[in-house]
Structures are given as structure tokens and as C-alpha cells.
Image 1 (cartoon, rainbow, N blue to C red):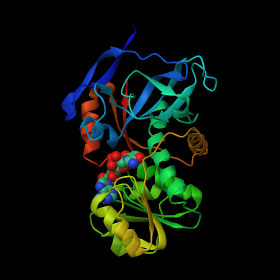
Image 2 (image 1 turned 120 degrees about the vertical axis):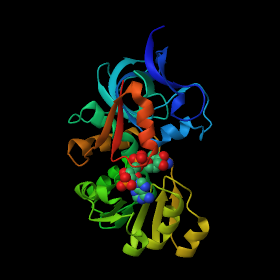
Image 3 (image 1 turned 45 degrees about the horizontal axis):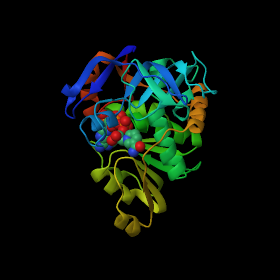
Image 4 (image 1 turned 180 degrees about the vertical axis):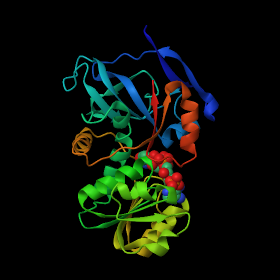
Amino acid sequence: MKTMKAIQVKEYGDESVLNYTDVDRPEPKADEILVKVHAAAVNPVDWKIREGSFGMKLPLILGAEFAGTVEETGADIEKFKIGEAVYGKIVLGCYAEYVVVKEKDLGRKPNNLDFKNAASIPMGALTSWQAIFDAANLKSGQKILIHAASGGVGSMAVQLAKAKGAYVIGTASGRNKDFVKNLGADEFIDYTTTNFEDAVKDVDVVFDTIGGDTLKRSFQVLKKGGFLVSIAGKPSEELAKEYGVETKYISSVSNPEQLEEITKLAEENKIKTFIEHVFPLSEAKKAQKLSKERHTRGKIILVP
Ligand SMILES: NC(=O)c1ccc[n+]([C@@H]2O[C@H](COP(=O)([O-])OP(=O)(O)OC[C@H]3O[C@@H](n4cnc5c(N)ncnc54)[C@H](OP(=O)(O)O)[C@@H]3O)[C@@H](O)[C@H]2O)c1
């Protein structure tokens, strides 16, 4: 059996349970692809899984977002060839030198981006696509408020909404004002100095990536018939009735057709990436500690 380096979790807990170790290298079944990981992105879901929030079976290897090259293909795989540069979003397994994925999890890596920058796209872009287009049906000319517009998801949402022709208002703290405006946002609200509900009204769509009080207060800025979509908490049905708006909580999934559209947008320079920190895989503890502070601009990347 071949081995590989990976970050393995054998028990739930804080960063100390992240164990950089040798594990068996996975082998692809007939309908699977073995990808050599060149870069893996760190996402909040990784440390939520690590803490036991999803009750997943242990031991496990974290990591939901990656870019790399096809190393081996199962007998039934036709779409991808050995050596091809790919990227994608899965649930587990990317904090490793190799990961096994299904064809539906993979997209063609944008050819204008290196592996680190490519790895910083799929989670944010697919989640944003499914929230603002599939769920909220955002249209050109509509007004959208995007919370945490400087984060991994929000920074993609701003750019996708702009590419669609929407009017975009983004929230973050003041240090991210220029960053969010440079992504294309028409307006910026510093949540540390301004209550967004005092500064915005009559929006068509709110994209909530924060949950809690932010989600609750977001009802106030929607026009009647507007749409509140969240990836961070279940919107209240009572408030939806009271304000006359539609709501949805979504959990994003891999989608190869959407990923191909996202690849094209990246190749047309309509999606910019931003990486705040790069760590070797062996320093995953440091990377997750930073992610949990909830002030990452763009993404944190691990390199196996
Ligand atoms: N349901 C799903 O399918 C799904 C998919 C992906 C992500 N998620 C969840 O969505 C959330 C966001 O993910 P992410 O990767 O975008 O997180 P992230 O990159 O860690 O977000 C960090 C950003 O949030 C900003 N921020 C922090 N508090 C804020 C506030 N009160 N108002 C506005 N901005 C604030 C920070 O800006 P400042 O430094 O300026 O404060 C920072 O740039 C996480 O909880 C994640 O688990 C869910």
C-alpha cells in the first residue's frame, strides 16, 4: 500500500486534534478519480466538522476544496485524463497529498490561475451561485445586500452578482472597504460603525453568511416580495410572514455544470481571487486557528 501525508482527525476537539501523519493513499474505484492535491483551501466548515458539529464518522481527513492534477482514473472515467488540471468542492479529504473524488465533483481548472488561486474559488463560487441565482433568482438590475463581502463566500458572491448586472451592497469592517469596492461592490457598509438596517432599504435580495442577529435584522432591509437566502442559519418563518418575503437556507453541493460556468468567468477575469495566508499542510493547526477568528479576507490555503 502506498502512503501519503495528511491531516487526520481521530477525535473531535480544538486544533490539537489535527494530526499531520502518514496514512494509506486512497485508490480510485471504477467511478472515481485520484487527484494529486496541489493546494487545499481552509473553510469554516472544516473546523466545525473538527469540533464534532456534524457528527461525522472518525477517523477522518478534513478539507472540502482543492485544486490539483488527475493522477489516476477508475475504469469508467471518460471525461478526465491523467495529468489534467482540475479543481472542486467536496466534503472531506483535501488536507492530504491525494484525494479520491467522483466525476461530478470536478471542474476544469481555470487556465489563467495557478493551483492556489484556483483552490480558493469552488466553495465560495458554487455556494454563492446556488444561493443568489438558484434560490433567490437574482436578476440584472436588482439590488442585493451581501454580508461578509470580504470573506471566502461573500467575495465570490459580490463578483457573481456584479457579473449578473445587479447593484451590490457589501458589509465587512472598515479595513476591507477598498477590497470589497475593488471586487465591484457599489456600496460598502462597515458593520462595526453602522447598523446596516439603518443604511439600506428596499433590497430585492439579502445573502446572509453570518446568521444569528445579522440574519434576524436582515428582514428589515428587504422590499415586500424580496428574498432572504442564508447559508449560516434558518430564517424565521414568522418574520418571513410579517415582512412578506421569501426565505431559504441552503447547503451547497458540487455541480459540474456550474463549475464550468465559473471556470469560464475566471478565465474572462470576471472572478478575482484573494489569498490572505498560505501555509504548508503540516501547519493546518495555525491555518484553522486563523479561520476560526472569522476575519479572513478571501482565503487561507494549505500546500501539501
Ligand atoms: N451552507 C453552506 O452550504 C455553506 C457553504 C459555505 C460556507 N458556509 C458558512 O458560511 C459562513 C461564511 O463562510 P466564509 O468561508 O465566507 O467565512 P470567512 O471567509 O471565514 O468569513 C470571514 C469574513 O467575515 C467578515 N465578517 C465577520 N463578521 C462579520 C459581520 N458581523 N458582518 C459582516 N462581515 C463580517 C470578516 O470581515 P472583517 O474582518 O472585516 O470583520 C471576514 O472577511 C461560515 O459560517 C460557513 O461555515 C455555509
